[in-house]
Image 1 (cartoon, helix red, strand yellow):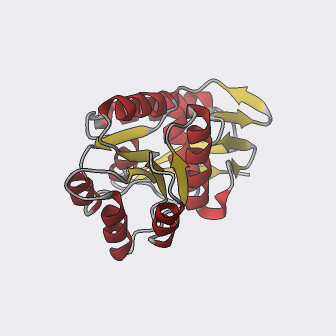
Image 2 (image 1 turned 45 degrees about the vertical axis):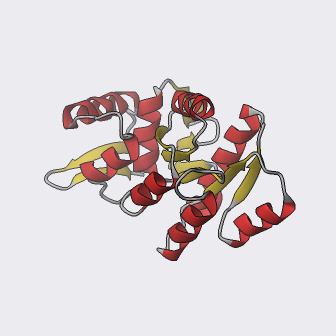
Image 3 (image 1 turned 180 degrees about the horizontal axis):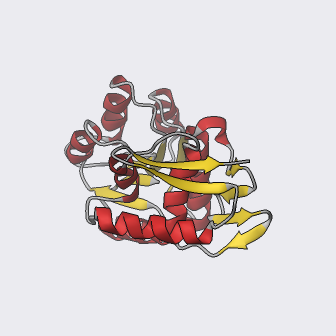
Length: 222
């Protein structure tokens, strides 16, 4: 899952980025409204954390332009201004939630999980394929109620495949979800994650199939 932080307070932005990356998200950062608007015109994310008091272009204008392009990406507004009129304005412009600074990190992360779920089909934290189940809120996977020991990156790959179970997911789609601007995952590294997942999902009914020339497909063979 990719998260885009738009925040000009570098200490806060770096802290949020590090915390969310430790939770398994791919996180990118912009510190001005103009940079954010430019990035959002050609990049897609699963969630935007948007400050209002930005240099060069306000958070309100970034949000307005995002929605004018037809984007339905969930947006969580972060601001030190707790003024009711600003909150109403942000929500009217298309924000999905609002959090005033200072905030508790645990609350932010809970809202992040909720908004990402809301942006996915059904809005549920649980994704189920046969006996395989992924809890996206708690970053845990089970097979037949037995826990699976998966790394954060393996969980991210599994989530992408389970969301599209029975359909082909190509490498470009997977890498876009897994990478942020500051890192580059090679095709070979992706193959390693998939190989590890196949070994840990060595059950008769679950299979990650390579569709040569197209991509990968998670299948439930029951």
